[in-house]
Length: 149
Image (tube, rainbow, N blue to C red; front, side, top):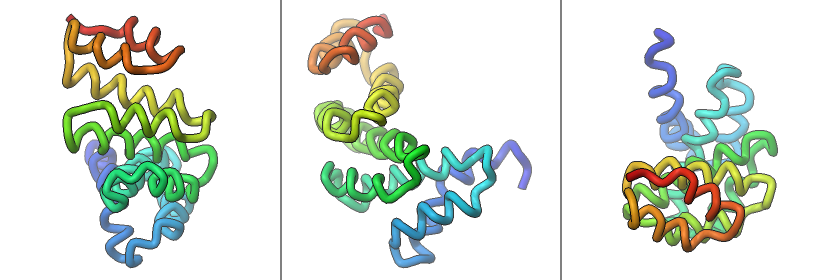
């Protein structure tokens, strides 16, 4: 496959992996770890996170359980994909912030980086700052520093 198509392919890879393996998430993470090209492994994990969120119907406890099946060095990518799915399903941030506040602390910054990304796509000015105000520190300060007008 041409390099220019690989990101799009890997971002959708988990849907096919899980379809083939009967929605076995542990096996799905193993496929990301052993079959994905090293440079795209992170994207395979983000894709898994998206499917973790969708299959759990945004149940944060289930998301945490499933993302924790992945390799520790890639779990942040799983949470990144899951929290983006939370946000993009509704265009709101309450559930996303709750998820980021509930996951293991080692992955919280990565999780909030997904919120910041989507926040910049959905909100500007005072609406942006209103979402920032609902975050705990240090993320509230980080968020305020990124406000878009």
